[in-house]
Each structure stands twice: as C-alpha cells, then as structure tokens.
Amino acid sequence: MREAPPQDQASPKFSAAKSYGVAIVANDRISDWLLPFLESYRATNAATPLYLIPYDDNLALTRRAAEVYGAHLVTEDSRDLDALAKRLYPFFPKHRRRLRKFLSLALPLDEVLYIDVDTILFRDVSEIFGRLEPGKVDFIMASTSDEYVYNTKSEKYDFLRDARRFNDGFFLTSNKILSLQDFYKVIAEDGRIFHSVRKRGMLFAQPLSNFVAHRRQLKIASLAECVAGASDESFYKVTAVSFDDERRPRDWVGDRIFFAHWAGATSLPSDRVFDAAWREHARAAAARMKI
Image (cartoon, rainbow, N blue to C red):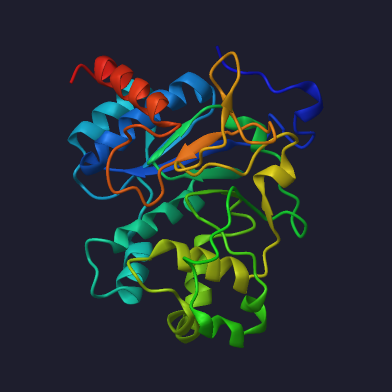
C-alpha cells in the first residue's frame, strides 16, 4: 500500500495542471541495480510517470523491463549533449555518457526528479513536487558532496567559494529554471574555469551539474528544507536508522528517509542496514521478469 503524505505535509504548490515525472539512466550492464529500483518504484511510486534514459544501445533486457514496469523509454535526441560530453572528456569514451542524466531536462515536464539507478525508494516522492519557487528554491537536492565536486582552485572564484555543493544522484528542478541550453552556454563561456576547478578522479557529471548550477546562481535547497519531516539521509553506509511498523526507515531523529543510494558502492548489497530491502526487491523483480 502506498503511503499517503500527512495533510500538513502535502505541497501547497502541487498542481494537477502541471506535469511531473521521475527520470533514471540505465542499460543492461547495470540491470542488477535497475531491476530492484524498478520494483521499489512500483511499490511506492506507481502513479508517477517514470522516464528511462538509455545509457547506450545495450538495451535488450532494459527495454523489456521498461515494458513490464510501465516506464517510458526516452527517445529525446542526445547528440548535442553527447558532443558536449566528448569535448569535455575526450579521453573517457566509456564514462562520458554519464552526462546523459541531463537529458532529464529535455523531457516534456514542468518538474523532473532525477534519481541514480543504484537506489531503492521507500516512500512516495510525489510529495517533493511543487516545491520549486524560482529565485527562492530553484533546485532541490538530497545530500551535499563537499569532496567530490571541485578542487582548491575553486576558492579563487566568488561564485564558487561558498557555493552549496551537492550529490547529483538525486535532484529536482524544472527545465524552465535549468535547461540543457544553460549547460551549453555556461561551458561555451566558462569552459576554461570549469576545467581548472573540477575535481578529477573519475568524476564526470557531478562537477558539471554543480558548476552550471553555481554559475547560474541557482538557489539550492535540501529535501529536508522543503518537505516537512523528510530526512536528507540516504547513504547506504549509514547505521543510525530505525524502521516503522511498515518497514519504512527513519533517521536518528525520527525523520523520514525517502530512499537509499549506494553511491560509490563497489559490490552489490549484502549486510548493511538497507541491504535486506534491496535483496527483497531484487528477488521480486527477478520473479516478475522471470529471469
């Protein structure tokens, strides 16, 4: 049964006249992550449209999963974005398609929530939509990421010095606030600055999303700041977690954890606090897909 948000936590901005959706990026190579995500989405968010952006053409299982779970397979043209990725990261052809997550900004939606697929959901994310207020709340993230965005040269630039750095594995915005054209324009004008300040070490999309958001001076807020009773916690290694009667997690102060993200994980879940839920969704997904 899907959890209905309490009345005092429902968004006053949510409008049925607007279009909302969730976007992910996937291919067959990461099906071990994709299928549990889809199963968790079905259990908690089936009423919200889901858009699956192809990472590449390795999609045989992914296409079938999209059909089984009712996800929209995205067909928006990625050529301009792929060209930008090639210019920025010419020596990393196997990794630069990570920028395809920004195709979420080309979808025909008033607001889009992008989520990395190495995630499972515990609650209805529709509660997050309708919280944007241009000039006040332009971009909603779930967790900061101080170490994996810029190097120390960023301190030379006023617009980066005190900027709020975020993990871009979960973010909500509108293409009326942040568009693909903003990415092209910012890099055309400030590409040299970007390359001088971006953190190296197999980081691709995250330094770019932060740089464009910061150069555009977007007002960045956290999930907990926008949704009453929500937690910004999502890291798979967290230990201070409790579970309610419906096995939905809460953080150490009792705030509601919406999702778990295995950011940086080098193996599939095994015995951490969220791993049992991941394994349960993986088993259910395998049965549904009959694989």
